[in-house]
Image (tube, rainbow, N blue to C red):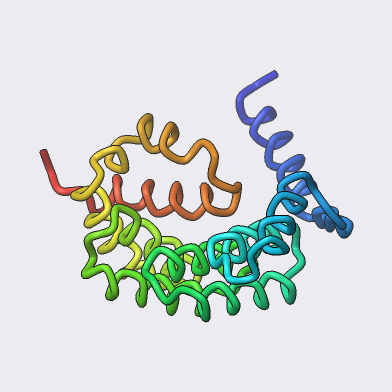
Length: 185
């Protein structure tokens, strides 16, 4: 098959695949992780970390209202930078990018930009809102704080357990950063 014919076939298949709507996941009532978190909350209704973790899991499962309620409860119990950051990641996975930026900016401000996750968390939020300038600026700062973000190989290793959406965002910003922003060596 000639290269041009291969490309045409590839392009046709790609367009067909892109036109297909992804199947919406059904509602998941429980998981072993949710059961553990539910028990932790039942044993201690003031367990902010359990509410935060359950909020994140519920966000991943698409149970947005329950996730938002748990995140709100977690933040009411513990107004700490790591809790705001975790809420930001949950909002990100729900597609609530303005809320992601709000929570991650607050977390970074509260930690005086000293937490290891501040800059790369902000990258996700700014990517989501379409503010690529701020995403790139924060990506550079993330690389300065954690050089693993400066190489594709180590970025892949660093983000192996991130959700597909989290990976997509950080990888898209990495590619743009590496091609158009990265300081010359």
